Amino acid sequence: MKKILLHGCCGRMGRVISDLVSKEQDIEITAGVDSVGGIDFDYPVFGTLQEVMQNSVSFDVIVDFSVAACAENLIDFCVQNKAPLVFCTTGIDEKAEEKLRKAAQSIPVLRSANMSLGVNVLIKVLSEISPVLAKAGFDIEVVEKHHRMKKDAPSGTALALADAVNSGLESPYEPVFDRSQRMSERPKNEIGISAVRGGSIPGDHDVIFAGEDEVVTISHRAYSRAIFGKGAIAAAKFLVSKEPGMYSMADVLA
Figure 1 (spheres, helix red, strand yellow):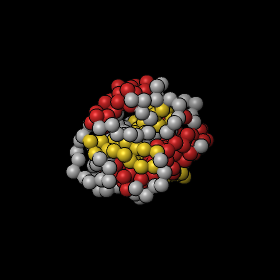
Figure 2: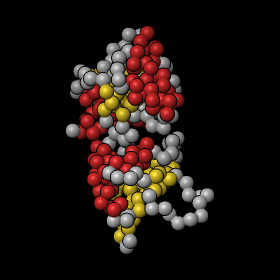
Figure 3: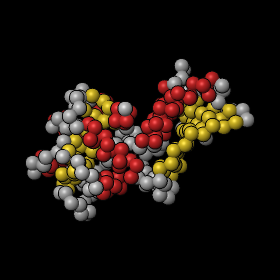
Figure 4: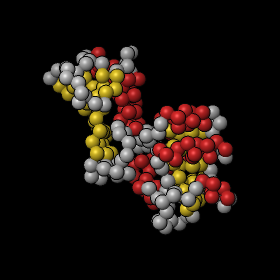
């Protein structure tokens, strides 16, 4: 039985993962960490990672769906305790990004902007079709939509989709997030990235290739946060006993 320490257990995704894991046969959550509290789970919840160690909680892997402000402390904890980390939080700054990259030299880290199977297949497809359509003169735009509570914009997934497009191009296009101060035609070699926030949208992403007299749109719609939870659980199972290194959902799906 594999054991998860769930960091950010009281958040929306934390609650989704807790419900999904309760139905699994080969993995369990032995403890959660969240400063918010106020939610009853069938496992103990601690306010800090240090309390987890003080209470001698056993775990094989940490799954993180928390907030960017907690990232550096979590990464330090994982390195100190040689704990594999499934890192799902988005919107972290460059200092935390660098710390995460260094952590992968001593522990296994799985990092993905989006944990769903569909999005990761989409990322692969974009890298293959973008050079064909770009060469044919198609303009490229990314539009993402999320619920009103999402704090970072654009989403990590939107940035990953733009990166996937660029990975197939000989000369990468420049991402553009705001055209409000520009009074000119659209430059050729740019990818516009737009964010919509409202309601309870779990996550919509469109990659638009706009050519002369035709438009190709590659889309992904999330109808439930369960798709991200299922991916995180699969990632946790995969990461246990892996060697140090930086992994992605592509490794899980291989």
